[in-house]
Image (cartoon, rainbow, N blue to C red):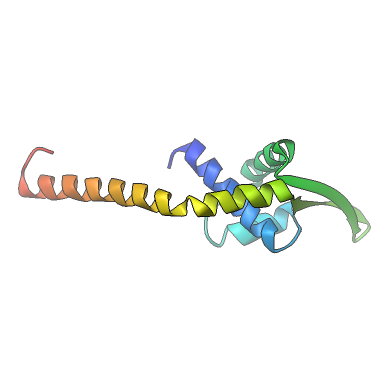
Length: 115
């Protein structure tokens, strides 16, 4: 998958996790990785970028005598996530179109026709 497309989709995965509750890096990775692979080296730049854009905020709390950084979905982040969900129908249509073209090409190759 294209790296930029993957990062963009991962942003929405992070926002969806934070929509349920505030969370910290390791837990976000754990929640997302049940659906798509993500590493710390991918997550933290995404969180920094989203924080800079105003889609998430962060705060620290003590946990086991250490500070833990939590992330919170901002109002702007909720609007951004909702807009993505609203556009989902269009995204599905695009994916269906791409899938149909791939299927047509595969069928042509199977029949010995040049696509």
